[in-house]
Image (cartoon, rainbow, N blue to C red; front, side):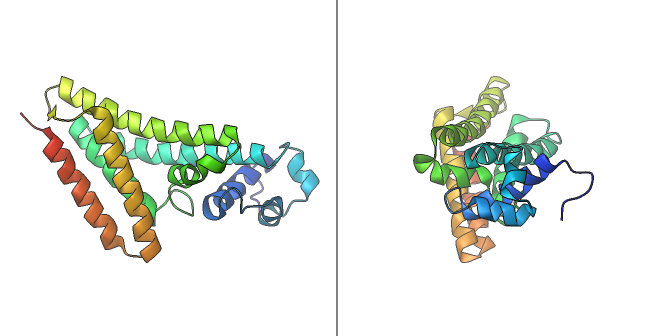
Length: 199
């Protein structure tokens, strides 16, 4: 039931975000959104022109939740090295403590990206690029500040970290085995140490 203080448009976005993140863009229908929101088609189309427009708003909402988790943790860190470790831990947390039901929304939409409408595919690319680019920036900052020295390119290290953790999220969730995720976290942290050695 919609909270009285919550605007209807925001209610639709929140409910749709969960549906898209659990069912996927193609499997989620307008009927699913109508059922979740308890609104008729006309009530939804008062705010959105079509399903794609709802999906775009829903992804933006989910992505902001991801960013909020990162910011809340990163604000506690002082060094680039600490921030890199927090990024690893936050990415890992998306498997069993997701910001929204269904796991990491960035990864989920990225899996569907090749089949998505262009606007949604762009959202997927931008989300993944923002995540990897942030890691690259922290690597560059840490090296410039003399915290460590990288033996591989920032792009390679960032892509390897994100790919390893997102893949481990899927394996751990599929097998319902958090230990497999812990193995990946330890591996990525060891990889970071091996390729970003402190002077």
